Length: 326
Image (cartoon, rainbow, N blue to C red; front, side):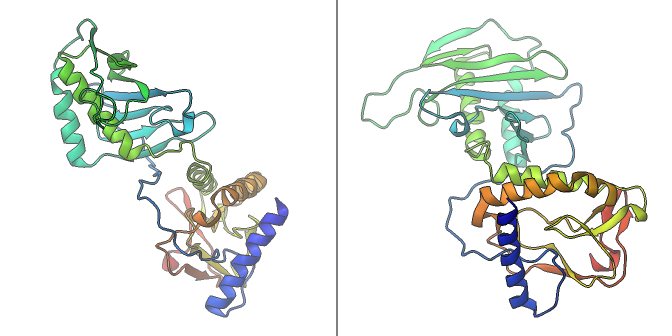
């Protein structure tokens, strides 16, 4: 692990020397720029710093799938749970020992979902469970089962939770069998099709993913060591060794070094010391998992801050670079 970190650091320093012809301390240099590789567009995991608003009259909708035995859980759409909230926020997972992915539906998508759920939400209680066998298309026709989208390779379940109440099963499938407690089978198929559509767009597989989810976990760890109560709690940080740096330098910090994880350049001195080994180990693990994907292909120029004697400050409980340099 130490050797991999030394190699990665050497690459960073080499890139920085070519780009700026400056003497720098061993701090926050630009990762090697990899040639962009064409990839299928996907929605990356997002870090949401606030929890969704759960009003007593609100609802939570959860989609979960169990795929065929030949499909690994990480590649099964919805295997770890896809939850939608009243305000349009969604959560994927969390998978065991992993962080959840979070994001938000578009306003148009939320409007469509609320309209679709309106007849069911108008009921004080759901009716008895009904059943229908989904039609199976003739072999070789390319048609899909019944009115559902995509190939049917999983048993699905959608539950509705009103406020702090008990989850109620709206729709579930077992093989070609459809079970529902919403008013009609057509409504059940529409709800299932719509939620599976959202999952197909936002539940990017594989999940968990060592690179993407590791990056989210690393970023959250960085944020956790930046809390403070006073300016004196804060220090500049060497983002390779995770050691504190004197404000007088010499050296250059890169608050944005083109990585998918914003580097830790300032933080709480005590929290930094307590988490130094954990920070280094997780950063090495994520870099190994991501490889060239650690670099944002849309980033062309890292940002820099030359240490000049000004100290970091504590602003609203978070360590920050001096105001004039942000």
